[in-house]
Image: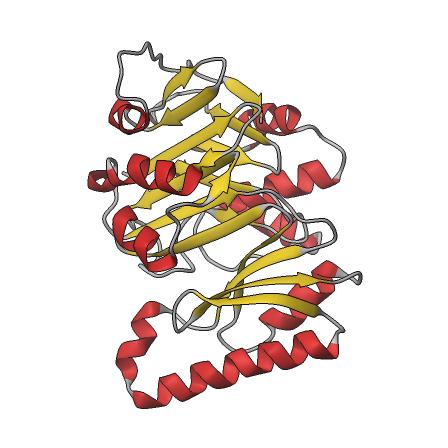
Length: 311
């Protein structure tokens, strides 16, 4: 059992960091192991934002040596960025092991990402024009405070509270997931994908990268592959119902859209609220009430339902 949530504002920005924190905190009973956010701000011309880590939170308990290793890994990343001619315009140490860089670069973005992740312990959580992906161990309040997400102005966001069932309790196995080089796509998922390994091998043969053994990551790579080949987000969501086996409800965000899909059995819950100004959806209505406390009408999407909303 996990909790997923999404929200999108139409034609305006809002404090989506604080709003998603409230939604996910109300769902923490569905997943105590980790919490993740994919939040979409206003992109700057010719600049990218990269969120990455060089260690896991649990690594810090292994002794003094790991602190020196973390510093060295971060320095190696900096050296590789400089080697590639990347102009870093802003650096933020979110934690000792996780960082946020804003930079300018006109070269091969996927090649750069692979070069950075070749550093021991390094993993890019997101690399985009609008997307910033943050995930760590703990509930929504803990992670949001740790990474300073309150006050993050943006148009939309998705989030996840995770109960580990088939993979480790670590940042790598936490949601949301992103897939490079498609820089502004993120997904959160509740369910199980039974043809995961078959589809993963097919995508790996086409050159895609997987950073975990969590079946949910497949949805990010699958969506990115479809969009890169010219499909619309709505087409990709509809196609997934036919091609992905299992029980699933998932939410996808791009730089300007929010979408959702439910499988044929519709076994995994989803509650939806929609108005002229905002769309909010979550595994339970309590998360929507955390965002909109006044009296509202919600509904449960039906089986095989696909919806897409524009910011």
